[in-house]
Length: 279
Image 1: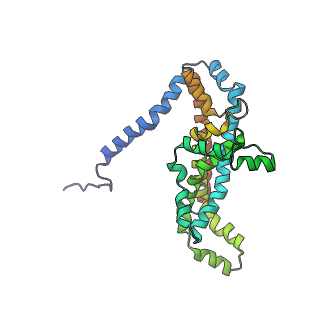
Image 2: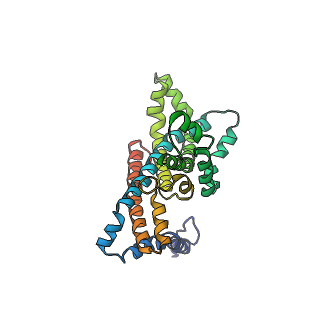
Image 3: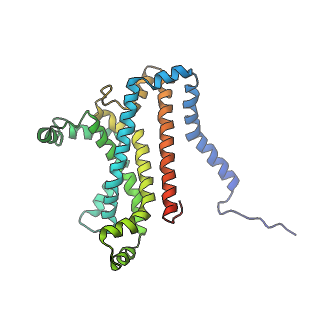
């Protein structure tokens, strides 16, 4: 009797899996491993001295703090923007929808130069904000925050938008017919379904912001202890041929990013289970 063979949907699964693992190793695992290999050349005391110097600590606080805040801002306004694009029709809707992807296509250095020119003291918006409100934007942490919001917005919108399109408006109408207000319908019907997608968009925007360099370097001002981001510290170490110092700082960013993304993904999985949806 011939043994029946079970074929997977993907032909040549064994070979395809081998190519996938080799490709993933070359693109992701090997570079990440190189960071820890270079870092292992340092003793524990040398490593601790590099990663806990006051200037580096200040750059951690600035990079992770502004990245988290920018992702949180995008999580709020990105959902509002996705809601308008899905639920409403208005003149220029296609143009607005296309402009959302502009940070993806625009070189980060060009974005940084444009934002710096716009928010500088003599820029169109910078002189108005500083003249009327006395707030300096360019070459301050506020400028860094604006740059990170700019590059992170598409991640939230494009993550939430397809989920929102799948939500049937009849669910909201049914909630309204049962006496629920607009806020209650959004809170108890729409938001539980959107929350996993919002958390995913937040995680993607945060991860992008933590490692952003090109769009931030021009508007940051690079003032030590004030507006100096961690990626700049790494670049400075590399320019000094201090590869072990650069990888030591990079390893801290990598570990903290992994921990934060893991916590966000666990929260996303927990939210999906609480709302009865598969993570």
